[in-house]
Amino acid sequence: MTNPNPWPSIENLSKWYASTTKSAEDIGMNHPIALQGRRREEIFVYAYEKVDGTNLGIKCDGTIYGRRTKVADGARSYQNVPLGKHNIPPYDTTLAKVKSSLVSLEQVVTTKLPPNNKKAPELILYGELVCIPERYGYEDRGMKSKWLCFGGILVFDDSNANSNTAQEVFSSLAKKGFLVHRRGAEIVLNMNPTLQSLLEDNGIECPRFVDQGTLKDVCLRQKGLMMKSQLEGLVITGENFITKWKIGDEDESSGLSDLKSLLAEKKVRDEDEDDVDGKRALIVDIELTNCLIEVAGNKTKEKGMKKKKVVNNDYDDDILSKAIISAYSKYDALDTYFSNNDVNTIINALVKELVDDLGASSKGQLRCINKFVGSAIGNAYKKWKNAK
Image (cartoon, rainbow, N blue to C red; front, side, top):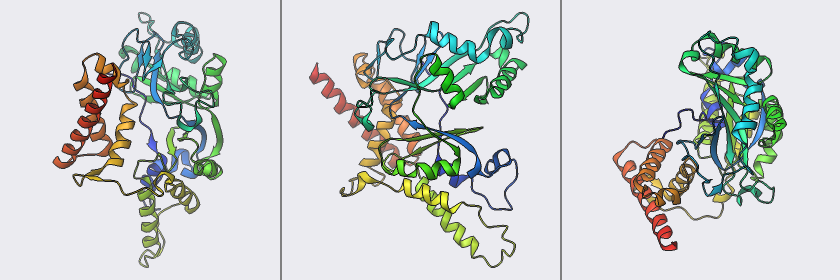
């Protein structure tokens, strides 16, 4: 079963900055570049460690969701990590308390619902399940197999989604200091100290808080941390704002080239003698841009490595390997599919992930991806079969 309420995809910080850069004549107060009437660099944000694991959601009725699909009822593990009270908060007590605190059931929801409809919204808490403990010292830091909550989604049923109920709850949460935004019949809660305190007061662990301040100040202060490559990156949240800032080794986006192109375009426009009043000049914070470029370009794993073999002149092995590792994390362990004789399901799912991730469109690219995924799963299946 497909996950009906997945955690929203998060844009890469470098790509976001490059894509929202405009000229003076293009800018308007309603444009994303001037959120809440402020310059992008002045948005107040919170930074949390981005943990490298697998996305796992826990619903207040006990249902568990992976990034893309529902986890089988009664499953004892996910991505080969045991699921139990040692790492998953009990839905009937802990999650119920969190939901009650969020929606203030008696005062906010029940009294606002139509007389014949007393159904409260459902709560899904999303977090990162640490399934690769050897990465970034997670095991040494006591994070092995832990589930660290990074946000939540309140899901309203169709009869309440478009009523005043959802908006009343949304407004109430915003006034209490939560970072919230609407997505159809949902209210999404992003991590900040208010949500973190609520979760931790109920015994739910969260990713490590790193910093807070304006976007520019946080990035400049944390540049040294990012350059050390001792964590996957940071998740940066703010009012109507969330991005992920990955270290250079983990950044698979085109953010680096986008930012370099941005500076080149800025130089051309700055030297345009016909633009007397500077209206076409791009509004760019050079210090912040150079900071993002330096972090994105810090590819420590590539130093001293031989050039990767090119497959069909479309994608090289390194690109495909990184893409499939990312795709693996969105589903259960391969062993689960092999045991259930469901090999074609995971192959088709992974092919779709790589096609979407890499923007594949040509016949050559599609053929390349199909061949790579088929080979990867075939080899994994043989190892699993031989180990039985």
